Image (cartoon, rainbow over all chains, first blue to last red; front, side, top):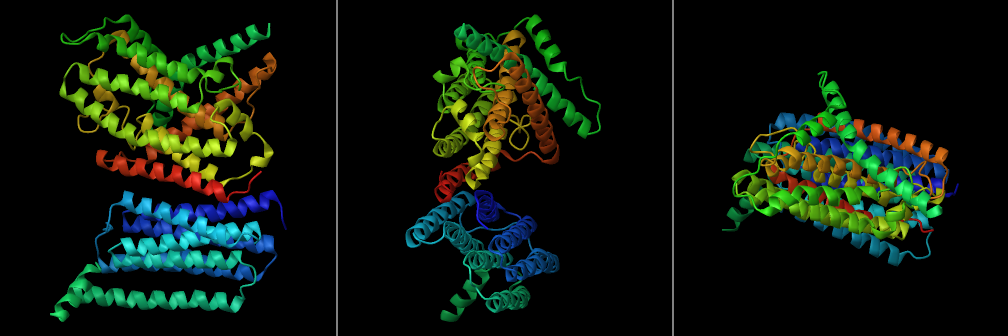
Length: 222
Length: 318
């Protein structure tokens, strides 16, 4: 199915995903960050479902359902639970200020748009722009991981990065269902492993600030 | 004959914005009061306040210069000129070809400049605090507004508000990400520019938080009436601007008949009521921000303006 309206809605949802990624950079409270992450995943679900509808690809509905169950409900709820159990500070410490982070984010979005439009001049316009947005979501997820000191918000950055991957996979026609499901489950496994690690870090250092890990390394080096 | 018709429409528009501005403010206050389960003053209360202020004697501080007396009229005049060329019920107003969006921002900027000068003129500490905070907000809000204008101009191919409004009614505009981002950014800027709640509370006189009120603390009588009316006009101006860019339905062209103008006017009123109610709802639901968080808020608006400009390049072209 093609037509300006179908295209516009797909474009709107993918662009909304970039916008919500920027919102995640702006948040400075952990609970608010988790809620924004749930919104991010919800938008991803809608976007993938819309792609399934316009491409006529029923297996994408499965991807959308996986995103809805795990990323909108299970992971945010589990993280909420974890924060309560860890009893950590709810404010997020950033490495640099929020303004500078957002500026870097805009730079990354510009970079991914420039790169994607250069490399894929003859692809289908819908796929092309979807890929540009997916690359920016991915890079913004990386940026969140790099600029946050709190391990929980790094997990959120990792999850939003994975949302970008799924968006790219939904845009590029022909990603097999098996690959998508295995990606989704490996993310879930990664989440569980990270969760265990978080509790271990907390037990050991009384904080989830990852700077504590640097100190440990430093002491060994002496 | 055509010229007279056009002039008449322009004069109606100029009278309309001044007449409607206090009503909009009164309406927003009323809705806010009802949301807080208070009864609230009548929607006509701002008119009564203004006439009372006009009747009262103007008290001027001993060491006030001529600037203090002139500033209220300059502020009001600049805001009125800017408000007179925004398409409210009709596009293509005869004066609108002299002023585009960038010039409107310039007019509002000069009004703000005089307000800050007047705040510092008497030399009280509150005036100085208010002026410095106002300038802090302005230095961030104006570039954000300009970036939003650039992204709109890139899409519509013009900085002329009438042309943009006419362009937005075409069906091929469709849904656009950059327009959505620009809408969010322009709302953030409008909230900051009009001293509404997360940035500044229009109803407060608490020393720590006031921005706009701190600057006009020394004014009384007809001077205060002018400044208050200018502030109300500015709120109407921003709301009309957002409405005419993003919901330009039922705007009439320059040569429409009187019946067409009437339906245009009715739909404008409906848009204002919806916009005012949404503003009141938003203000009731949010808490005021610390002054030092304001740069972050406006920085986000600036980034969104930039993002809107960037996303325009991946949008479907015409």
